[in-house]
Length: 322
Image (cartoon, rainbow, N blue to C red; front, top):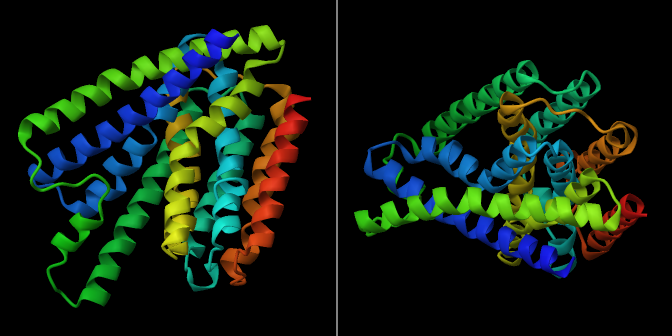
């Protein structure tokens, strides 16, 4: 058991480092190839930061442990709202009254509802995977159109390509070619290695504890893969960038449902555990609806709200484990 926990921790660390390495390499390579920064931010960065969850899901399905794949996504989405927003709110609060994330939030809710419907039609197959990926393509297309319109309206035709590149995660115009190649290799080698360690050890932990793989996915794996979002959101809160914090959570949740499950559905069938249909899917939806007053009514997320959100997450984890 102790060895499996250490292997799970090692796998998680490798996944996070490899995902970051892949993003750095892919972003800088894409910009060198002349791909616009706007396209890079909407596609490569978004997919790259979700790469650990994607590799975990694919590995879990190939190892006949789909509960880990589904548990990771559902658990991560719940943790993203209650924990990833709750902790920064406790630390410094989030002034969400100045954020305009309504459009993306509506897309996130629609993606959540679509995913729940597909789960009840389950098992999730390649057909459902294509539906989710089609929804993702629509969201990305809408984001691209909105970003281009915003650039025309606000910048009045000015050249903003350099500014966009500065805002991209991992961009470094001075990065030599050999380092770009090294980042790509480390990412491509590290991701499957980390996923292999984390999934195999998680299966062993579930067996020793006598719980289902879904429970491990909903708790241990979900919290672990939400750590990058938590770190990003805490830093954004400390810099008083509530829009970045909220946008990070909304975007991550959409990608988890549409991209990760969409691609994984093409790899193999995902049977839906009965407990997830009865409880966990509805907790995920309820946690998403918690954001309604902050997104539409302009409520600020104070430390009191932060305590309430993290408390709810703690209660959820206990209910899953007991």
